[in-house]
Amino acid sequence: MCGIVAYIGEKDAYPILINGLKRLEYRGYDSSGVAILNGDMNVYKKKGKVQDLIDHVGKQRVKGNIGIGHTRWATHGKPNDINAHPHVSGNKRLSLIHNGIIENYITLKEALIKLGHTFESETDTEVLTHLIEEIQNRDNLSLEEAVRIALTKVVGAYAIVVMDAENPDILVAARKASPLVIGIGKKEFFVASDATPIIEHTKKVVYLNDEEIAVVHRDGNLSIKNIDNKLLTPFVEELNLKIDAIEKGEYDSFMLKEIFEQPSSILDCMRGRINAEEGWIKVGGVETRLEDFLNARRIIIAACGTSWIAGLIGEYLFEELARISVEVEYASELRYRNPIINEKDIVIALSQSGETADTLAALGLAKEKHATLYGIVNVVGSSIARMTDTGSYIHAGPEIGVASTKAFTGQITLLTMMAIYLGYEKGRIPRPYYTQLLRELENIPNKVSKILEKDSHIKYIAGEMKDATNALYLGRGYNFPIALEGALKLKEISYIHAEGYPAAEMKHGPIALIDENMPVVVIATNMSAHDKIVSNIQEVKARKGRVIAIINEGDNKIKDIADYVIEIPETDEPLTPLLSVIPLQLLSYHIAVMRGCDVDQPRNLAKSVTVE
Ligand code: G6P
Image (cartoon, rainbow, N blue to C red; front, side):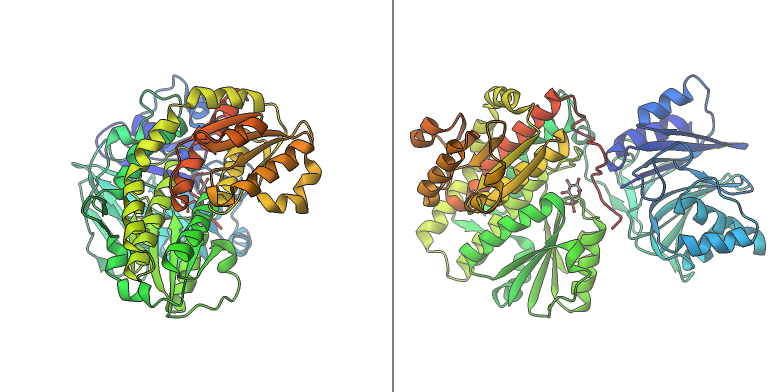
């Protein structure tokens, strides 16, 4: 949520910042801006996408080798040119970019107004800029010290970079609860919300921790202090990220690329963790805490959005295969109620980005209650990965499309492996079934590829659905969460209102909505409830609903009654979600494209929600 990029070195800052902003645009895209120092502080800001900023700057020659840039997802103040970052201090000396929320900004603003400050924007960020200015001027402090003292007065979350026109040889960066990475080049530094704007310049990075303040100097010097003014030693890490992983390549959108990457991303998630031939499966993070898992009173899964839906599948898997009791919680709810959590509980935070503010806060609460903290994340080095006691990466590679696809299947793959591993260790899965599950799991990438080959058929069905204003998704058992995910994908990117429901619950409400205009997508691959699903489809047809059914290959019974079918290969029921979600991703994708929507950057959404 909001992307930050900054540069200091010998090169022209503007193209580096603009390229960085394009890479970060998935984090927010309602307005953007840059400030470049070249004697004067030159600030360019524009409502809209980064391209609108580029058009606004036009042919002006923006010179200078120090600068900061920002792409915004509005929290305080609507998206417009004035509220866009960077924000500038009253004396025009400082400019600042910010990701996060300054919660006590009203109190700070009132105090600053009394001191004679005036404000142009409605943002909390401008208040922070003036606060730093006030402290710097009042005591004639260095920028670093003024920033440090200002941050002791701030309540909330921030990742900031500050630039000072009277000290053009440094940038000051700081973070609390919002991510920030420093890239170290030869006599140049990059600062960004994540590594994607940095990777094309250098692989050497330092991830800032909470309440740390860094000063990068043009001469190549980097120093880090904490907010208590204690000097720290920077921990330099090597990035393991390839540039083509963050480019669209031959695809029209990141989302389509990421959907089609799933055979390999699922394989990458399983790599080194499973060998059906030798008959073993293990998940490192679980192995190191095996006793905790085997003795756990229960597992609580905390997550948001699509990750929460993956958590629901985790509940079905852990309870069926490992017989461990599971609760799945919206992280935003868990953090603000008074849940019963103790040291016998394992709290799993499920998050693609590893930065979601509510999930991080829920983990904080679980930590206070002495639970074991387990992180399942995609982004290496992210806050959740660093905060948890143990955990596993899903290794899906960078996911840039705002709607999650390959991270979702990566999360389910990992949860499936954990459940099988624990179930077998607990003696809950007989050896023949265990071997069968391992074989089937290894086969999943091939089966996903087979589904992807049906893309043009799915596109045809999308054409039949594209004008709907509402849609209903129904599923039972493992396919109920998939119904939720199918509906979420459709509303996120095509803006068609959609609801996911347990198929049998349809009779308790949604059935009232069904008529000839209502497409009903039924995920009908579970053989254990086949007859019941057939009855549900009959009920929809009896009310003239249009049924699009996801079925196992050769399921003629449903083929005869549904209006459209998408056939997918059969698999063991606990593995079904890994296959049944794929056609729904493609269906939403094609519908959104046909409706002219921007699938990678749907309106009002952001990839990484770093504010609560
Ligand atoms: C946002 C994204 C979703 C994602 C959710 C949780 O809403 O648009 O795609 O599922 O955040 O994000 P996380 O990074 O914690 O999985």
